[in-house]
Length: 447
Length: 178
Figure 1 (spheres, rainbow over the protein chains, first blue to last red):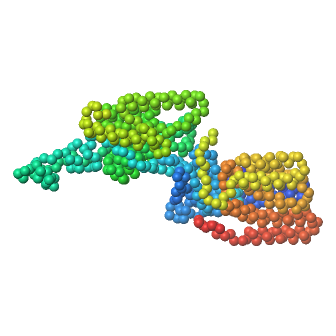
Figure 2: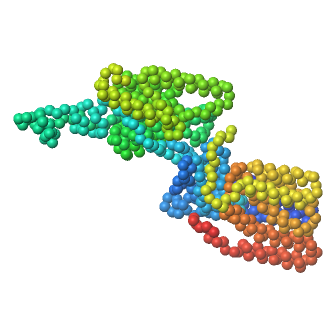
């Protein structure tokens, strides 16, 4: 018969050593009271001998988000496993130490009885996906003589959708392609904007007859006049998010390696701004598409509706930093679309694409997603690196302005509102410019 | 390097911070040391060892602290001292708390229910250890009186057999709280 291998913990060894020391000292000095000191340790060693090989002291602790906290605080629930597939799990008595760590913090322990629950508040990201809590557990027998190995658990990952925010003005291209919507196009068809009043022709619908115009213009009552209109059309918007970088607000964090803290960076600004733009257009029935510059995922096709807004928000929440790779071809916006590029403009690629689409006659705008920076560089080298980066960025943005491509600040709300290049002001100006362009026709001086 | 994140915070009452448990552990060890190292300047040694063992996750320091207490008791305490009962309980408590803190990071919390579970386990062992200590004192005082020793041993054995023979309650199912 094979013998069962029994491994003893250092704790068991320590209890045995202390018990032996007590007994030895008592026997040498002839004092039974010193021998009696060994009693609890001998009993613990005896208990440890029978439980040292137990592995069922491990208790799985699960994170749960049944209740949400307020603001950035998320409420998680640490609880023992309730079910294992179909059967309810019987929790062995003992203690469970949960070692947990939030991003940027040293680990902390939470020791509970094995059948206890405890809600925990952790910080979540303002938007996007992030691991908010890494944790693992150690199980102890009630007398602590047996302890399981540390069992790590997959971290708690949450996905926070960017808020929609107040609506923006909606500049549109003059080349509207859709067949339904709220914008007036230059094509004849069904719509609200009057194009002309003309005699009835074969193919004209009878409900188009304008009886007042007929009475006014057709004195002999020998011909009927109909109203002809411009077709209504929906606008198409193409959002392009540059996920090549995520610049934190604090410049000293630019040089930090390792696990990142949950600080909002340029990607958060991009998510919020893109969500606002998408929601503004989708609220009036326009079509919105989404793509990124990294070229790792398929573009979200252009569509309309509230469900599409949720798709866009979900896709934006899943946006994380992915290094840009060489693409076979540039993203292709729909014909007549308004193209908005959300980027930190640290390299020439977004500017190149903006120029390309601008040259194709599309209405384009860049959204600068760098948050308002805290200059917290530690060394002179860091300060120089930050200065050079910002200088290069400034040159790129100035070139875009010179080429007639507006670049708006993606900051909104309390930070950037009211400035000339804020998202609200910028889109209002773009809308006004687009109206003027439509009024002037497509002449070269329309810009 | 410490980076400025926000730590997780339990959203519940009835939790004791681990630093309080560490302080209590060190305090018990120091008080026990103060009894056996009475009047000696060398008391600084067990004090430092006890404090370090409560903070640092080292089984060596815990062993050193416990051995310093045991050996000092054997050397310095007079035979038959009633402090034996205190030492049997105190050494056991310090040992258990060191064992718990050994696995834990510096900061954290422990629930009152977990402390009660620990206390219950400690009391179960003390239910045998304390009579053993009383018997040792009895044997020390009346070592020549055979009937007294036999009666004491018989009482202890009877007590232990009664404890062992008690039926264990059913294991708790999830959701049951005492």
